[in-house]
Length: 285
Image 1 (tube, rainbow, N blue to C red):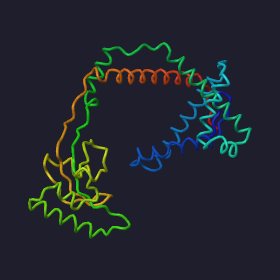
Image 2: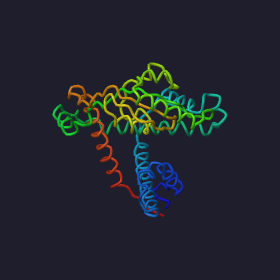
Image 3: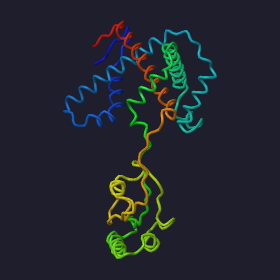
Image 4: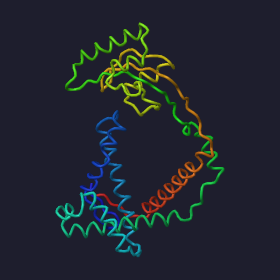
């Protein structure tokens, strides 16, 4: 599947490398697709990505923009830090490769400048556009529901006996149902008795899923049965709930304008790349 793009030969290996770069996320998103069809689509997308990257690089290469040496050296220092510092970089990268890295840095900077030029005449999103976006997607701008929870926990690890931990929690549950005060049982049984077992306020996504599945289905003042998570056994109690609340337009206006501007820039760059493709000579070998 080698390509010739405006006279430049692109080996099949480059397309395969792009496919492997995309594969982890691609496999996750299209997990249910037929294997043969999925592989064919992945290769098609990888080929299109490579074509676009090459066309952008070729166009940026026509630029006579002079990239100051200090900017290149600054970017090179960032690369060295990714290797673990100057010493490790010097051991792993030979001088010829360093020059190639510098050329790549210059190429990336020219591409960035080219894209800035493409977007330079875009108008700022208006207040009306921002307001319309806010009204259409108002649910996106809500503070998440939060709950305040306390728990009794017996951890399970290499030195803990799971049956003993479970039996202890069943005993705590029995006392709780007999009228014992939850916070007193935290002090008596929990492996994390600080603050009476109080975990404070949190929203979904901040705790492990097994814990959230239980506590977000409890009412205020309600205590759970004994349940298991990857950390051990728990009994939880919900103290308070704060409902999701919509943020005002003024609170999120700046965020919305930034998003709309990003969308406009992406669209302008996509149109620019499409123009490059429409006028390019692309052959498949």
